[in-house]
Length: 155
Image 1 (cartoon, helix red, strand yellow):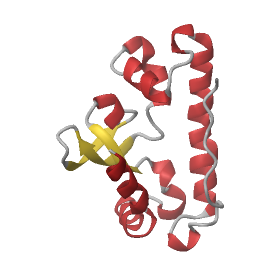
Image 2 (tube, helix red, strand yellow; image 1 turned 180 degrees about the vertical axis):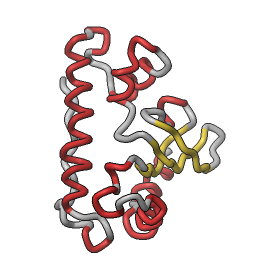
Image 3 (cartoon, helix red, strand yellow; image 1 turned 120 degrees about the vertical axis):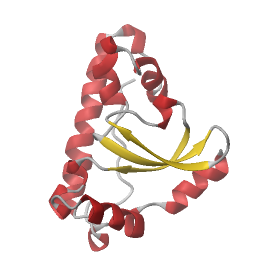
């Protein structure tokens, strides 16, 4: 079964009044994220050992293996940097950061509750080079804290 990019549960313009334009959503989700999914499916088609594995299993299997670096880069990321709110293995909340495809699943840090993509394609249309403004706007107006809370309660 091929991986599919999930449809967004809202219209591309739904976040515009909260600081993220439809153009950013279309580029970030529709083009960049789709490219990762398409590439990952190509790797899975060529490597029978990946067939039937979940995304999480592929991330763990390919993490730290040079020969599977392209697989990991497409399975484990949608950007070159991330900030995470994580429920750690010790049951405590923590904020971490990762580069490239590294994420709490790959590093076995715990359950990711909230992720902030800080790669330029996530914000350059609306914020140009103002990453701090983008991050502040995300935390103040865009972060889905209800989802994070539900994930925390289900852990």
